[in-house]
Image (cartoon, rainbow, N blue to C red; front, top):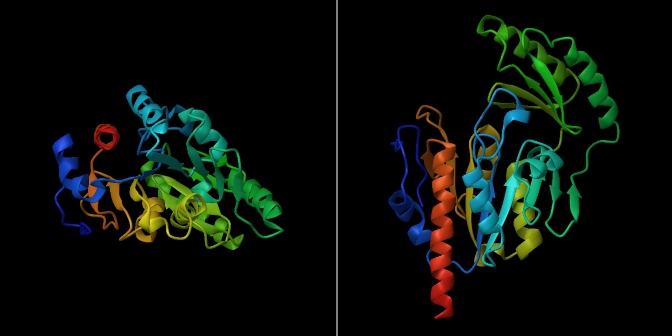
Length: 282
């Protein structure tokens, strides 16, 4: 498979025929298909504040149908904490990886929590107090427990760069890893863990060390945090970056323009896998 570069064409809207081209040969007669999906900006549109990010009814309905198909595994890999994203999606049988994979809740109820330094909780409290001093002109802090997110979407353009620079300086001074997203800055534990490593952990946990020989994988995400997964899965999956930009390089195999395109992707998967399942029973 080839990776699109920054000059690659972006289809304004995608259709079933497009996904026949993108995925038909790869998925083929897949015995098992794994869907790894980001939440915000991927299966739910980007909105002003996180609590408004509701999954569209059609998208939830197709995920519910996919969740009960025996040849499909669905995992939501999100920057939200796993309890929050599970509540928003509302489907018990999925796997939920929260805080960029630092917390993983498997469908059978078992949890994985990535280790952090012993003094990390105290550092989070101190940083939270410092960041709260920057909460003005629409900027605010989302406390996810393990991760603190500084939101500045509603902040006037003329003061954004100053506020973001101050927030980043505080995070770095506190010994945190700094992540950047759509109008957010995140303070994360200083550990070598991200959506890519979490995706690999899920695949190994469910399918064993030889997971590459057992499953086909589709990954879809919309921001820089998803690039970690696209890089980690390169050569072992087909990935989609949800973006309308052609200027930003991506490790994804394809660009698709919107959450509506992701819905089309999920509907294509459902149709294709049902057809394969039917063929297997004939």
